[in-house]
Image (tube, rainbow, N blue to C red; front, side, top):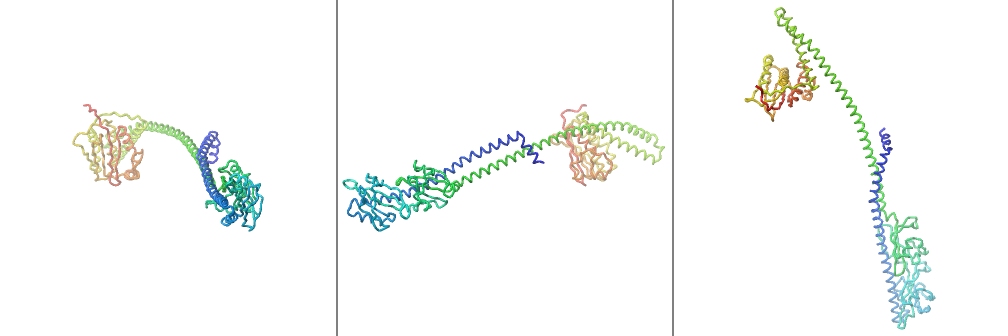
Length: 561
């Protein structure tokens, strides 16, 4: 049911708007760090590949320059010793295994000297139409187009001018096997790196796959090859490789031979961190969505609970009003009933009193005992009714205080006189430890405070066994007058102390000792003291006695004479 209610809550227009608002912000915040991070990952991958390409280009370029320098040195030797041209050419081939053929030709293309270590015999060719020969005759050394020999190995022709005193009339041409050039390229050990080289026309010269490179594939259809061929440099670019895998590649030119060198690796490997970042962004987005849903769930639960609590609160208010009304009716009923009962009870009391006082000699002892017992029970009922009327006035707020400044110790002594006979009857020591000097005046209703003292004295005598003691003390404590009534009676059980001031409550051990009692005395006493601005409290030890304390505020008004 909760799930269906929550779904209905989510379907509300306002909830949808809030949800979309937070989702939009979540996506924007996700993109704010994702896009720069992705760009940084791409830039780092491109920089790494470009650095590898530059290092590889430098290695190839250095090797080509070394080849060119060796051929130029041989050309200078021929220039210095023309008669030893044959020896110089053969020595050049012997010292350089990658040189497969060397030829000295005249300006019109006829061979003067030639040497070929592969066959061991001269192979006369016409070089008159080679572009490299024209460049050499013009004074420039160069690498020619890459061709394939009879073993399908890549070969390039190096042409170097032989300068004589009267000008350039001959050219040294050397065929160089390029197969070993890929071996000199240093690649990182970690990762799947591949290198291939193309000429100026985009034909593959060298590559990781010898059989494919031997075919002289035209790679000009790859955008990165076009960029190097046209612009001379290409940063990161991607394409689908021979194995159907998308490739991340960079390219860089080799100026000395007018070639292009390319370094490639699988895009998934090059941008591995990018995938991690992307998945992290997705995870953050999912967690964010879950957080939004949890927040909406919590908001819905709180709203639902608030509505329920509000409804329950209104219901409680109505019920409380009903209870107050019932309590008011109850108080009115008790007040009316008590007043109605007190009148006939007073008449009964008056009648019993007359019978006992005027005809005491006419009754037998048994009859006299019955009359006295009836009078006593009638008095008890009248006392209970009076207490109920006091409770009714307290609860209705109609209890009036007639405040008079008095010395509390005088009120204590006058109240104790009424209990002297009871103390002697119960054989209980009843002592007032009167202070040596008058205590500060207290502004009280004397009759109501007398009622408090009477209730405390009566409880003390009722629950203190014979031979015990009841001590009364009056002191000044923190600007108030404190009265203490201490007995050595049965005490109050610890588990019932919190209820001792409740209406109609009597402790279990008190009920066992005296079955009769209304349980209203302490409630009335506490209410009376608090209406005077004081407090009523107690300390008790079960089986060792109880001490009740009440405080009254001092008065600065002098008593009227």
